[in-house]
Length: 130
Image 1 (cartoon, rainbow, N blue to C red):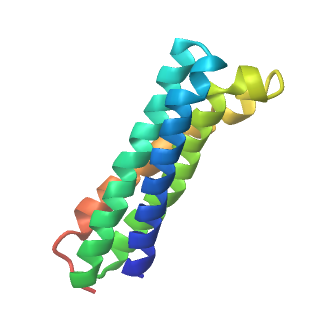
Image 2: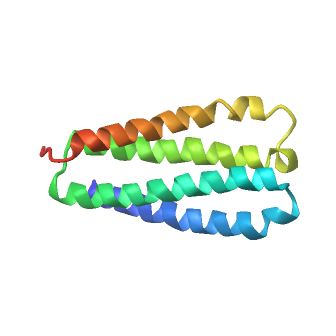
């Protein structure tokens, strides 16, 4: 299981760099500065949690337990919900139909809560075996 979290962390890290590069170079031509700042927030949180998944995977090599497994799952779903919804909200005026933010907007805080819960389970899992 730890190898899956290491791979997920590496993949999310790779995507954070690629998405960040798109935001830095491609978005500046099509959206305003406030939307770019929102987009960059999504990239930052994705990258932080990609690193957290890598740390979690390394820790699970030595101390595998259910709390760490839950932390990994919450980080993965949290990244997708939090950062993914932020990316969509940042480009909504260009790529999405009007009113779409009412559907996507509530997903952001849910993703944020998942990330927070992931850190809580990470905390609980440190030092536990089995």
